Image 1 (cartoon, rainbow, N blue to C red):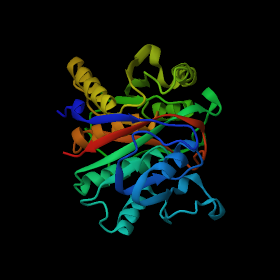
Image 2 (image 1 turned 90 degrees about the horizontal axis):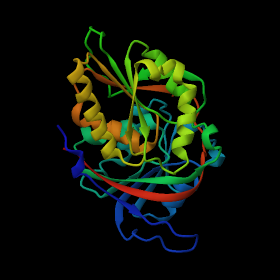
Image 3 (image 1 turned 90 degrees about the vertical axis):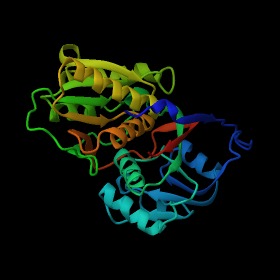
Length: 319
């Protein structure tokens, strides 16, 4: 089993406008960031020191051409996330191999982020640096919506599809519980037969966000049925490595009670937690009866937060 405590992370300081940001002496050959309108995405792009920077314009944000940033950008006509990432990598033409690469996951729509790390793993990239910026606050607090409430489908994420058993008698669904209660409900209903575990972000990104998260998840309680058949677990909202370790422990605990037939993972909370789900799958679940499932929506919010409270750097080393 993977030991996730070996991975390295640190915080980078944020200063007021016009002041130098501490801890940003490091430079990269290539910096990738998914464009949206949040200050915590655009501010980091401006401060990062890289030989080449590239904005990724994700189709699900539905930006019009007049809204595009002036800097170098990647645009694809491919809507499906894995095809989009393959198109990106073909345009980069080997720039990832043997280069010092940094990826800001803050603005990524989760399936696109999962697809990127799947392809990096498949390409046998040795390591990448990852940045995530915590918000000062979410614009509408617990009423903040990160995507449209209309879910087109709940489906397995391409590349994260397992070899499942016919026996479904003790299937397990692990949900990273975020703010979007409608997404939690849709995933829970889609796998209604599963025993359910909800992973809450604790510690949360900001002190008030855990309570806001609880308020939202309570709206999905009927579908999730936490009081009767669900289990609550916790992992830091800003730590992908502890999240991956927690998933490892949850699966082991469930198997000790009774052998789990199939496992479904659904990361619906913060990007660091979603990255933790992704790493756990890539490192420990490929070829097994484990799948990543996601509620696909047609539209995602271009701006959900105000300010930057803290910035994390994670070093991802692929085995």
